[in-house]
Image 1 (cartoon, one colour):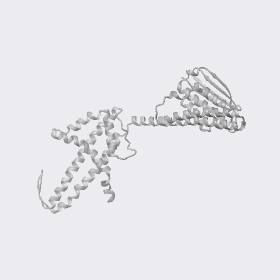
Image 2: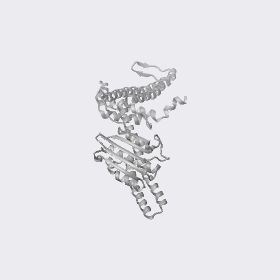
Image 3: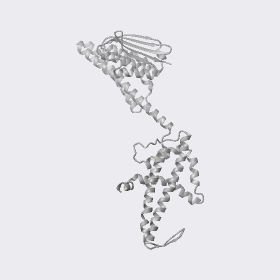
Length: 382
């Protein structure tokens, strides 16, 4: 019994009732104008539902009144995108008005009926359209019937209009696809930011650790000064990258062109040299012709490869080859194989290299090769 009466103490029951009454306000005004054409408001709803913005307004009403406080209502506020959405909006408006008529009838006539039954049971006559009804005590037994019917109408029609709203105002297949694409873009952006932080901050910390260790071992004041200068430059660059990435997280509009490209590779190579790596660098082809996205990802791949060399092998000879051809950009980084080098399938940095290459339609191979550790990447430039 308590469970049956529980909807009476829920605010949702009455907000849904209010939602069904809203269209009846227009009907009540129309009755003052012309009470012979009660169907006119329902006809006027058809062209109204074809307006794109109406769907968004109806969704907001449904979210606030039918499902107040819900974390996941299933509604995505916004205008109609396709004509199918507009037709669904028309059907929704007609269904809402029809259910509004039913609940208004129930809320008006069922309490009146209960009042009549009470008067009949108490010895009063009632004049109706069908004639006069005489009093009788037995009418008291029928008083709960219209009240129970009123309860069922308010709760049942509220649940029915909520189900209709989920069906007719819920996302269409096109909207679901758009939402999925947006979510995918967000996940890709998060992954890109994670790679940016890993590459930039990881490289800076690796250089700082290597330089600090080398300076302590050397015991040479001049070398220590150079090491501290390299740590300062690398740390400043890392802070700039960190600020840019945090700007993306704060949704600030920063130009993508601010990210480093292969044209800035000299700064990266000099940082590796200052950490003790003996670089043999060869650049073939015009780097300025490489498209921006490819050049930016190529820079990060080169940065991660050099970071891995410094982290796992230390100050060793490194051969760097950058080749720009008609349709491809090739990157090759080779260094002596260290005992602690990760295997070809391990390491988040190596995985990031392969992911970057795959997103651009290229391919990357990492692992031991002829006694060296090799990172070989080929990216399409057209």
